[in-house]
Length: 312
Image (cartoon, rainbow, N blue to C red; front, top):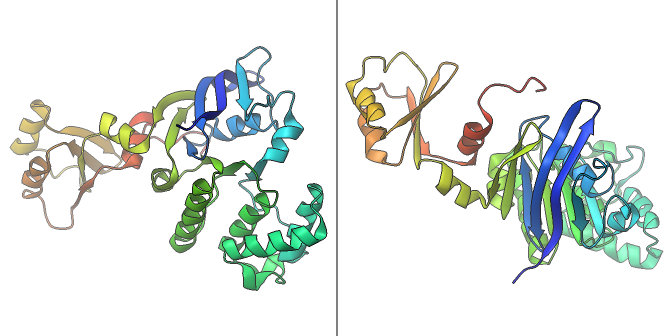
């Protein structure tokens, strides 16, 4: 049975009068991936920063145990056991790939001969072996992100912290990074992840925490949360006026066999019975609707709302 290596209990954080994190608690198992989901401003990055000592929790507001260390007092120890992949690309553009890795290896006191072996292994792992002498400015966005992950792994961390690691990347690169993260989990690395990609969370997270306005809304395994809080199917209808007089829809809504949501000009009809939605589709023109299984994004929008956060 896996043990919990991170324990966060009743932690809060304020910036002036603004509460960024409010009374958050959760545990993270070793060799797993724990994901934080939420709109911009939900408190995800603040919470991650607190876990490796970059931000301080409110005095007396809960406790944090990260591999036996308290970020409040053991910031240096946590930095040695954790590798961090920030949101922004902060590579040195004037240097090449190997030179960027060499600088980081010196931070951790890795001997030059050992470091060379590590560079070769990491660049091979991230499929960058042929780019070792290429300057950073000549790399694609996907290559830079893979290099930042390689750099975070240079000291063989027990904990890997990733803040939106695949934002702005094309699907091929994103899937490559997902596969590498799965490999790292299998090799014993514990991963913390923030992401706006619901599919990313579903693919690689063992547990997720959905945050909104600094508070914990839901926590659990992605599939378990879907099963517990969402219908099985949804139909998106792109013209909200086309069902105004539909007896079929009105009857199903009245009987609570279908749940209706609306955003802009689109209607969302949710049901556990596919046949109900198929019957409705017969009243619609081809191309005016999309029928599919529900996913984590549907759950996210149900929990946090469809309106744009004012900070977005």
